[in-house]
Image (cartoon, rainbow, N blue to C red; front, side, top):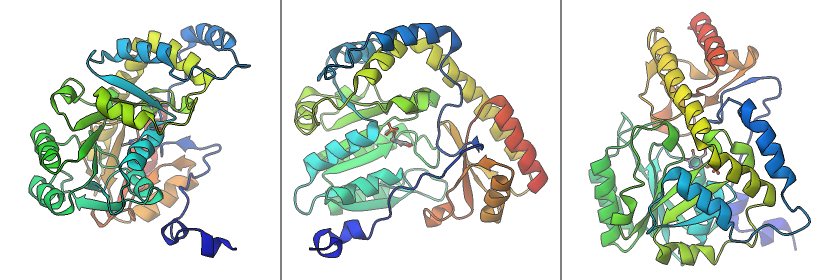
Length: 356
Ligand SMILES: Cc1ncc(COP(=O)(O)O)c(C=O)c1O
């Protein structure tokens, strides 16, 4: 028996998710929060971690952490919370649960690449509906595709990655209604909620076929790997059956529980990043030949002639951004720039001013 005989052809055709080595670089490629854990909270964090029982399996339900998240994020009582090892794991749980033979996972294009990849891992057929050239949701095309493909699950990131666009709220409602008419589920992915002027959290309970996903990754806690699905118990109970036991380790439960008690400190960092996003976008808009797309996330997508050359020139200055040019035809000649610290952004702006 060999790998080429045993492994499914669609898996053999995939490339593993590539993470570029960023040692010694100004790292502006992965939408991390550049600020470290707040100094004034470090002693409390150490105490919380020291109190974790590492000899035991972690709490399987992570009830304490869920309560802390519910309180910090003001999650309505009628909704349950399911925790994942990053929201990537939650995407996988939902996809696994929906993977009947022939089932379709639908999203927009361009979207977060893991929607497509996880659909393939789980044996669903992926269908991506192109956004309009200005990256807004093409409601008519979406509804047509939903009626034709009858997707089991539809993922919409609100705001979207890699474009940073916050879709029109009514357009998203129309998509949820169209999916409902076909018996499918919509996952509203709010990975970037902390940077956005709008959220669907307080509307999600109104839609019987929609759930909402968040992560602490962009909030300054990417190293913990913690994502959450928020939704009606009848959905979450089913996904919970597929969750591997103890998926949230004891150190993550302790650290995230402590961080949630000091949630304001992380929101303050996010607010500073929103201010920095404004500064960065304004500086980019003054550069010749740069088109800046409006962003409600902690990154800015720009279009420049010869993006590949600009990307390589930034790399040679030890600045790592994401070259999104080849990810989708609508993204030709684009770079996605994560918002960094004021000093990092100044360095990026100076380098681009020299290059363009
Ligand atoms: C839209 C979107 N959803 C989900 C994720 C995954 O987040 P996590 O780190 O919680 O797995 C990302 C990460 O970039 C993202 O952009």
